Amino acid sequence: MPKATGDTPYDQGNRPKNRPMPKRPPTGFNVRRAQQRHIDWDDPAPTAAPQSRPVGDIARHIRTQLKSDPQLNDVWIEGEVRSFNRSGAGHYYFDLADAETDAALSCAFFRNQNRGIRVAQGDQVLVHGSADVYLPRGSLQIIVNALRPIGEGVLQAEFQRLFRNLEAEGLFNPDRKRPIPTYPRRIGVVTSPSGAVWHDIQQVVARRWPLTSLLLSPCLTQGAGATESVAEAIRDLNLLTVDEPEVIIVARGGGSPEDLWAYNEEPVARAIFASDIPVISAVGHETDVSIADHVADLRAPTPSAAAELAVPDRVEEATRVAALRQYAQAAVDSRISQHGQQVALYRERLERGAPHAPTLRIEVERRRRDLSQVIERQVALWRAGQTARDSRLTALNPRATLERGYTIVSRPGGQVVAAASALSPNEDVTIQFADGRVAARTTNEDDQHARRT
Image 1: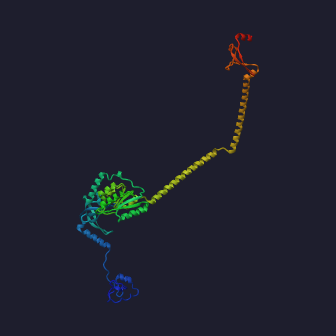
Image 2: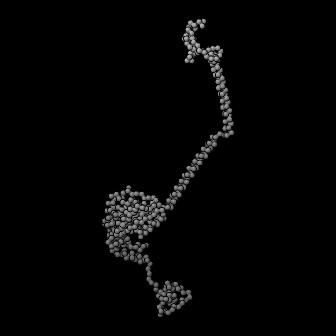
């Protein structure tokens, strides 16, 4: 019987027609182990297993081959720095790209080799190193041990030229940047309607602050016509007269410098600068800095971060409002407690200062008696004085004198004549008696003298 060729004992559908039906395995025969070892139970002698090698052996072999190739072990390479990243340990990782062929090589420039050497995105450089395989990832990379700048890349040179021109015009002036509204009711978004950016912004705003509505102003984000499309989308939002947005987010996901280049063009920068609505720029990843980021009122590292900066967090706001409510309630309670303590203190003082009612009644009664006695004495004094004055008046009353036989002589005008020498002869006078008046005329002086004698 032929040896097994991979057919299982139960895989009869693929068994050749001229192959006889296999016998049932003997008792105790391990079918799975037989399959693994390619053993037929009719001929249990093991066959040779296929040759295999561990992944590490193959990776190290490739690495050895690279190390032994003179063209890869000591090589100078010219290209443009892209996707530059500096690790926390100080190592440089970047891609060395060829703009003509669109080819790129991963490079690692370790800290002990890169001291004093500055590398930036877009630099055109000449590097020296050797090819190697990073075993944990199985990736090819150039281990750089020397780097020389040979001039700026084309994109970087254009970026610097436009940056200097716009900076001289004042488009990057921090004093002109406007604050972002804290609670915007409507946000305009300038991005592609088919990308993940629009979905991410919707998710973030809906989660953080559902009261804010979003208005998409669609545009191209890369390729031919993207610059004009982005600038036009920004202008369209500024032309709205009904439900106009209070803030605009200009957003695009990450990509190569060529993919993000539309946001380094002058039309986009001037559209952002001319916007009457505050603009948040969120282009690429955190390490991607565009001209649009410098002109915008606020830069966000990512589109999702832009949505977080544009709206508050309802959980944080609810917590803040609850804290303010608690603070206000505590302040009111404290003020009420203070006033209550003052009222209690004043009541205690009033109660301490108020006299005892029975004692006060006795004191009032005593003072009433004293006052009555004083009044009675004063009235008695007034009466005695009045009686004395009446007696003096009675004694001085002319009528009482007239009743004793005296008279009062007065001239017609009522002037009393006090002496006889004051009268002239033939002068009319009035003589007042006790029971009435009589008119009289004086005589001459001789007659008066005779009468007096």
